[in-house]
Amino acid sequence: MPRVKAIQAAVQILQREGVTHAFGVPGAAINPFYAALRESGGITHVLARHVEGASHMAEGYTRARAGNIGLCVGTSGPAGTDMLTGLYSAAADSVPILCVTGQAPVARLHKEDFQAVDIAAIAKPVTKLAMTVLEAAQVPGAFQQAFHLMRSGRPGPVLLDLPFDVQMAEIEFDIDTYEPLPVHKPAATRAQVEKALDMLEAAERPLIVAGGGIINADAADQLVELAELIDVPVIPTLMGWGAIPDDHRLMAGMAGLQTSQRYGNANLLASDLVLGIGNRWANRHTGGLEVYTRGRRFIHVDIEPTQIGRVFAPDLGIVSDAGHALRRFIELAREREAAGRLPDRTGWVEECAERKRTMLRRTHFDDVPVKPQRVYEEMIKAFGNDTRYVSTIGLSQIAGGQFLHVYRPRHWINAGQAGPLGWTLPAALGVCVAEPEATVVALSGDYDFQFLIEELAVGAQFHLPYIHVLVNNSYLGLIRQAQRAFDIDYCVQLSFDNVNSPEVGGYGVDHVKVAEGMGCKALRVQEPGEILPALEQAKKLMAEFRVPVVVEVILERVTNISMGTEIDNIIEFEELATRGEHAPTALGALNLDQMQFLD
Ligand SMILES: Cc1ncc(C[n+]2csc(CCOP(=O)(O)OP(=O)(O)O)c2C)c(N)n1
Ligand SMILES: [Mg+2]
Image (tube, rainbow, N blue to C red; front, side):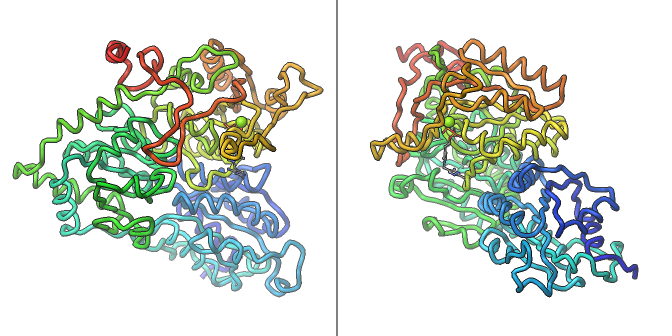
């Protein structure tokens, strides 16, 4: 057996498991890893400017392509704690990332050594495995188990914490005898799917709720195939958005309290049976369960057994990987089709499609300062169907969910559950690393943008071009809107007179200067008619300079975005679209004549 340092074995295993990129920040306790990385030469490293940024880059990298596992690396102590937010958002959204941290030597762990913290204990609730590896000979097994766990069942992150002396110790290891462990994914049985199809057959107005598990399982094609075969409309969740193209005749809109369409909620409320696949009944999707569940039956298919019944008791629960389940559904539905047993759904499908054509929100406003709704209209005009959108949270993200269009899986990359401010920028960089040829468009409010703004320099240094649409209301907009319930507007203002930049007109931070200072390109627009030319110009700048390009749109400071606490009670703050020209980029209303009857 060759004798190698344990950390050299670890790096060899990373490569054997398919890792080609790492995102990180070095430090003394993790330098053995960096030495092994340099020696191996097979893993490209992107140097983040903040360790939290590295963790979100790893998330973006994983989420951009099926099979990817993002690796983030940091030293002991604060590097690990900085990456906790990435571990949390990865766990919450079922995203595998591997976080490797350095650690004080084993014999000094209990001596309050410099930057020694029990990161494994801290990270435990937000990982599938968090382990300080105390024996060098355990290092290969720990990495083998990490990959097995990240890929098996409900995917999620792992943290491996490596004391300095453990990294440096020599062990017997031969990569040629290493084999990744088999991945465990449960599969729905014939009996389970027959029962589900019986329930679907008995329903009059069935819907499929398509969750992120379908995207994790790389099974969007099977979802569309099943929907078409049984002719059942689909409501994607925020995490499942893109599993069925927005312009598909069976795409019935998103339901929910925030990132939803009026027709999505109306369609869900009109249904009598919901088949949820790879979803988790997130509370911002369901709203109050009384309203969500009243009058309809539920089938829940999920890869994680303990997810069944967690939020409410379904009428039928099936533990299965979404891909395995969809393939079984297709197989058995074909048998029923051959037997002439599939019900005719034309009336119900048309009913849903009609709502999609008519229950629209207005986007076309000519106001100055710009109303946010207009930004999304211009984005749709500027960016093609193959655009990868990245966003996190805020009114900007919510309105993006309401107005943008997504046509492919992994083209809406959003930190769905954790929603950590600052996520957008580094996650977009991770997407760029994973998909260098893709058109990547990030969407942030001003506060999200400011949170991890230093990561712009990473995009400039490593030539990771993307467009960052920054909608600036100089407010913590979502929280300002939420404070209406308290009748306050308190500690949510980002406005101040910038002594260096009077041209930002009291909006505070001069994002253009900051972006330029970081080595990126940036444009600022004040009027609706300037948005599209700026986005076109941004594409050119991106191609020419190969750096991130920020397009800042100065918004009206106070615009409330549609949302509510129940899916049958969403508050609309703007006038609704009553003519095609009010919502020119809405799908289904593209034919202006279709809406004239609403006049
Ligand atoms: C780390 C973190 N802290 C606080 C919040 C709560 N929060 C959600 S949205 C938001 C304001 C976002 O402001 P901005 O990015 O400008 O977006 P806008 O709502 O104005 O479009 C805050 C503070 C959060 N999601 N994450
Ligand atoms: Mg804002």
